[in-house]
Image (cartoon, rainbow, N blue to C red; front, side, top):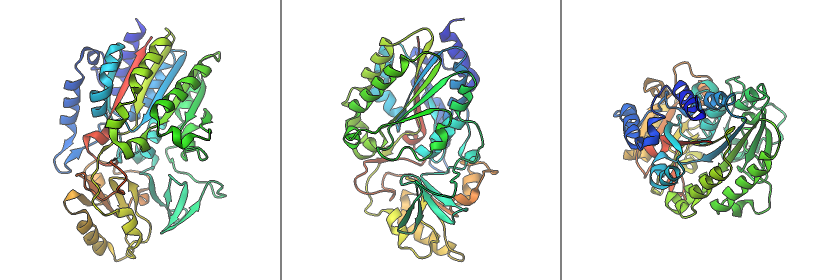
Length: 416
């Protein structure tokens, strides 16, 4: 059996789909239509996460590649939608005879929930990371992962040097890196999340050598995606010279760039032609290249209201609002549920839904036995339109809810 056939077999096993080989024959648009059709929720006016074609299954798929290949190189881009793949990446992928598929993100469709799911093979209901911010019972405060800080209304208490252990991932599953160590793989995690502060969810890197980006021009580099990609290909080339089996995980954070500039501007950098040329120039029979993403983004129109900032002034809330962009959690004080719900309905208006926590289980966005349910607010706002009041005026696009651009992401692979 050829390596290509083995990979197709592994894809079928892990993603419960036999369509991977077909997708190499320009059938990807048809498959995308099918996956959207079976997951559309008329009640929520959005797309429910697909459990068969889920990013959660990347965990087992990459592990299953290890007996076939000595070197697994992952280019993990933050915030690429599948629609963007079709408009701006697919042509370059086909030119290099690459295989591709569409995967579903998790809910909420944001980096924290998604990367923990990918690295542990568990859903948010299992690992308990429900957004970029959420209530932590052990601290009796809401946690904000961007600043790695506890939030007490407008005050932030940094946790970079905390004394009390911070446990965000509750799944207790071994990371992908820890599993590959058992197969004699050396694992490398190249990070571009922050110059001084690495990705706060450090637990997902257990079992890998963490290589943070520490150059002084980091912020400038993130405004130039072509330079950012060049950094990762150069570092990958250096690591490929090392002997032995290895997984090289490149975490390429273009999320902020897309937030502020949209997908159109990203396309001008010719990233995908550069990336796939690099793959072709470095292919080998015992090496496999994979490109994945965690969630996408959809266009946003600033409504004039920032629900995050507005909620700080609402004394009926006991903790800061939390959640993820276009899916927000709210924590009313005792006896204030109705007044907070009325307040939210006025702010959100026709741009989304105001839901109760139990609705997340009713609509199967989360499992009924989800861990640490106290982390989720009693009230949830879910965006359906671009004018949802989730962020400031500088953001051209946002994510976290159920729009197809938020939920569906590309999966691309080259078998040498």
